[in-house]
Image 1: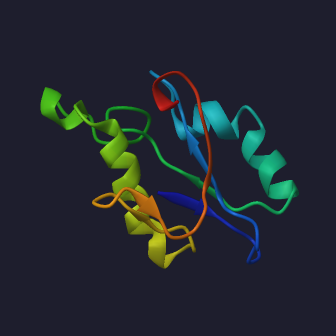
Image 2: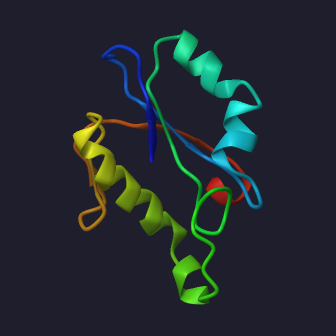
Length: 106
């Protein structure tokens, strides 16, 4: 998980989830959205979905069966770096997270 923050923010972080055949860099960084969000003081959380961008490319179809769980797992793992905590087991958030996604990431 990439957590981009310059100063602590009282606003919820923004989770960016790219679409099919995309990546965090190609979709959000090169497209300028990361800079726009950071310019407004927002923390950005993002990662490459399994099999995309710099993420591990598995040949096991089961590794791609539940991409939503991989998003929740990444949020769980980032809880030490951010205030965004998500419980995938209970499917509840203890802190709000704004999410932006499209295509596969929506």
